[in-house]
Image 1: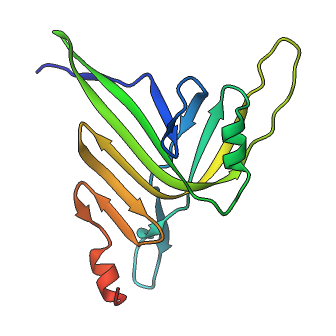
Image 2: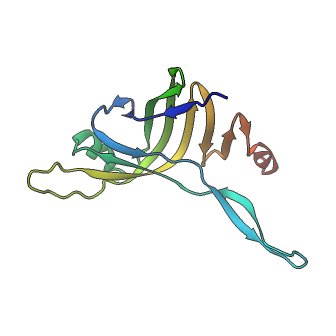
Length: 172
């Protein structure tokens, strides 16, 4: 059995279609996280947890410095922005690097804050922004891993719409 190792070590961020190459040090993207609730009842020997929705999504971007276009985008809590993170997975086997696979993460959300920053002698100023995410999608090598949109009640995992019957039952 040949072992395959994936390495994703770099990415670029786009804010409203504008590339921010070299301007962000780190991004923590939002992934749907299941909200589970406990259920216990008479006659049950134990307690179970069941799905009750998806927790709120939040992303964070650590900026390498202060950039006017980012500070302007962060200013309004009513303006939604589109983000795209693009990376490349290097896939290795015993034969060396055998593939380079594109990774694309898309999200829409509003900035919650610009993040604070401190000025220090001889050190670059950095800041971390928080983003409330309403829509997220993840693609690896062209295959959609997930699509989640809280306002449209859409949650697709591996091509299967997890909320189709739920929307039908609600009449929408």
